[in-house]
Amino acid sequence: MIPGHKCKFGSLRLLVFVIGMLCLHTLPMSGQATPERFWLAGRYDGNRVVVYFDAVKFEGTTAPVSTKIATPVAAAFFAPVELPASYIARFQELPNAEHFAIGDRYDLILGNGVIATIKLTTLVGCETDEQVGNDSFIGALGTVENGDALKFAKEYYAVRRHQESGTAAVTTSTKAENLKYANLTGEPVRYDVETQIAELLNQRMKAEATEAERLAAANISPAFQVQPFQLADGSLRYYARAEWKSGREPKNTPSYVLAAWITPLPTFRILAVEKRTSPYDGIESGLPDLRNVVDLGAGRTGMIFGISGLDSTDLRLVEYRDGASALKMKLLQSISTAE
View 1: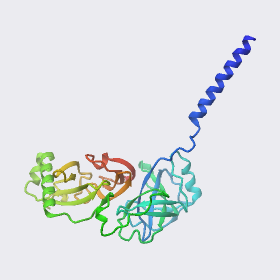
View 2: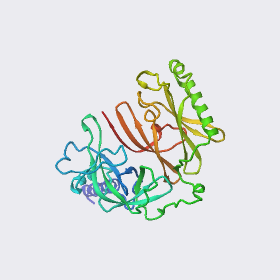
View 3: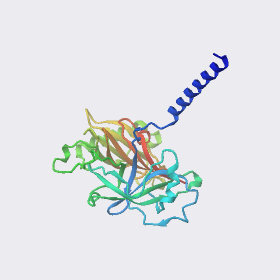
View 4: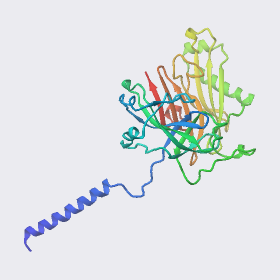
């Protein structure tokens, strides 16, 4: 055998092997599962919702192709405009973009034990002030196939890709309290429970406030709000917000505000706390505002918050975790803007 031929044959085998390995690493695996994603949705009108699937940069190109539509009922979704599919398509070529189109169906997780189905009917986008670093958004309006599903629902929801199996709605009934699914219960809180929670918040204020803040709040009875909610496993939790305000503070700003995540078992105790997010606001917008609690499936609890900063607003969908504050919970989607 000629030595040169032996060398060529060995090189050829090596080249084929390298090409094969490159193909294994670059070609998509057939049958690979699509990653699960969740998005924020808000009530648009009586039987439609608005959902933004992806953050994008329009760079001032929407005006020639957009059509004005009404502003959504739910705040924090800005003022979307209708956009043609051909315009939306350019952004769907980006990595990890959601490929949505008119007629597609998605699951709407309402937070009251019901999962409705929506059909996308209008493609939309919202252009924000990108020059200061904000994202713009593309998405759609979806019509709820069961027209009554939104009647008793809140204004903020979660959306996932439509699942043909296991999407039957949990029908509320006189035995609904025995069902295990994450939800913001909305039930009245007993006076003795409120009293224990108020004492916990007052003690935490004294432990964490500065000396000047403690002196300012010393003789003030705090105003507070308590929201009971249920985790996906049926466990009860409370989200409580409090403010110490006499009405004589400069600029009418509360002396101190505080929020806490509380478990009642085995005894009432604080799991995590939330600090003031806006220096001039109180209990309503100076602390994370819990808008809804939704069941994400597989034992997971989703939370929807509105968070106001000094010059910013942020609507967040997160996965709840005991012991974590709102900003440290796993973020699933955020719709935000800042000046």
